[in-house]
Image (cartoon, rainbow, N blue to C red; front, side, top):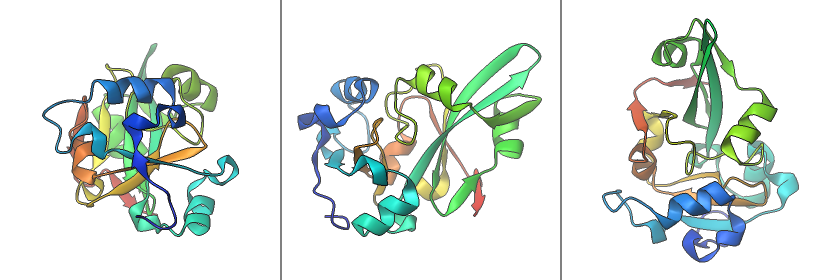
Length: 183
């Protein structure tokens, strides 16, 4: 148990997940560091989905929480998207490492409407599980070093608990040392 969360296997509670997340769990990679039934989910109050409010209300530390942010990088008329997974105590190096990884002249957080439409997930609940297959998932090495982290579920009314190494093994994932800086 983490904090006061009532965790159960996510595969048995698809109603607590955004459709792309549920679909990804149904085809969980067999070579993942954990089995798909070890991805856990807990219902939460949707008004407490933002990290700081969630942690305070459910007794989860910021160090156990990870955020997934969608970054858009542009070079000329081409826009590339990536997901960055970083601990809640850090911030993604969007203008340095992420921009270079996307081979972009300019990178910034994707506009909320674009992030929601392209992921099929709710803003404030976006997760690296179930993202478009052609997007890189950049995972800070500190996340992978965690025995477990709490991440979004694609919706605001629940959270996922997953082993840090499993995030580094997601399809399209690349573990990057120094992806994030202390907040």
